[in-house]
Length: 343
Image (cartoon, rainbow, N blue to C red):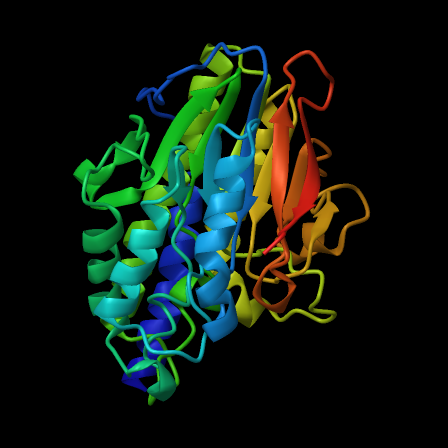
């Protein structure tokens, strides 16, 4: 009964959080290094490396992206391991050493496999909150700076305890990396529990508030600076097309985030792009356009036609990277192609 009450309290708190943050805005500006470049190309990967073969090949993936003369920035959308392997310190350090080989600035968005799901017996097991602390220690040693050999400054929520939530502007596009993970944004019960623990729920509430604030900061800055488009980067697929009959019980923790994205996108004149991993199969759609099942699922009262979602290939489909080019003069602003890995 006590665990049920904790879960119910978490759901109510998330609902209250959604309302409380529904009209917020902030004044902090994103880092603007190179913000007025006429064109800009970045690479996006996610859900890689999974398993021994991909781990062995990952340095070659880094080399291939480094060799692409067009790419100026790299974004990794989280899940640096599969969901059935050990979440060890040694593994984290090994992937960090791979990340350090990227020549271009690298923004890493945290995934669920490296902390949220580490309670599983075959993952250690570990306390997920311990793993989250270690991820922040290993991968965010210089808050406010990207990874990669040519690190650059980014706006960060490090002062609030979330160094992984970062924002930057390039070529009149506002970028925001947001710590949103699968497993119901980390409210899926840990091993041995039927409901979220109080500590688990508290972490989700705090991180969700930070994410929503970062979303609003990003849109506020983009409107003030007259940016042409917005790109949101996250691990979780909140609109998973591979799930034919989604249950709200498995998605309710995303509600305040979807509310914020929908509200802010509706107020923004340009296109909004949401890049995510998690579901592993390339997909491009408009998740909140008229006729989408996700409108009623997330209780949205109006369609959001300017929100575009792109899922990158991952896991067993991690055979390419997404090469995205920003052209501020084109109506869609962003266009992309999938580049096969040669290794």
